[in-house]
Image (cartoon, rainbow, N blue to C red):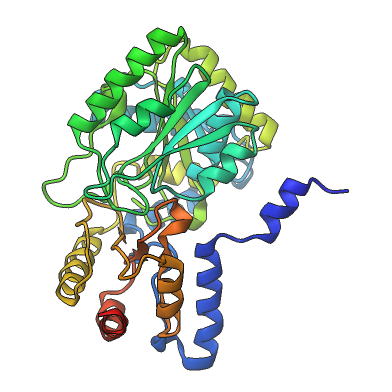
Length: 394
């Protein structure tokens, strides 16, 4: 008999993927231009041209056996050295190649951290709203997920609620800023308050409480919005990163875990992350794209369209009567629904071929996620459907 938990995961796609697949089927019937799909967070801009140039250069000038062969389990040493130098330069850290573990995207990085740090029964605190796969990753290592309820006025942290959730069993917290799905960016004030609380609780319980900073959207921050680098504020922070959004390379699945030397017993923690990669079969991220990411790690795609889309959508939805917290970054909007039942609201939108994801899937009912990493023209064509949906409940 197969593992029942894994069967359940395999049979039940996330609500995001369900909507995306529904959109593909509807497009065959009514035409792609008549389906307003805002379901999936798939970047809509091309990678910077340097990415393709580096790919071609490597293919034209490298020994094919070496280029396509295995690297060291944690990643190619030269690639890690380039990435470490970039982190040191950009964030004022003393990052070394041996503190980086290259992974198959941020998801693999999170899984390595959770498997490496958590024992069965340990507690992991997350902040609603959050990426729903966190639950799968946490439960699959035998840990217990505890959810901090959302602070829906600005999507910062409800510290009174958080403090009630932290116990001697708390092993780590996961922070995602800029945030999927709200677009919120935690302020430095918020993060300093969080750091002080974790220092206090770590001292009280006699063991470090780790913080995992999940950062695939770090570079998508809008004018005037600063994204603090959390290891500068809390020493027991591990960083999980992916180039899927900054370089528009989601399908290449390349990222890293960074265990700074300031982390308590950092060498053992790094060994645990690397050991988890071994146990999960994640050793040696794709070797070609390791080298491309390292060569281009200081670059980004042209991300400016996301800010323009955010401004357009926020302005137009507010004019229609939707309550929208303006995002500080990412490519998601998270407006309140016009009725309490966000699932019913999403279904009503679906009847208009308007595909928006219910907030309940992100542990934040009464909202929907709109993924605006789409051509601006799609947003403009979808505005009548958003208006018709609003008029239904006015």
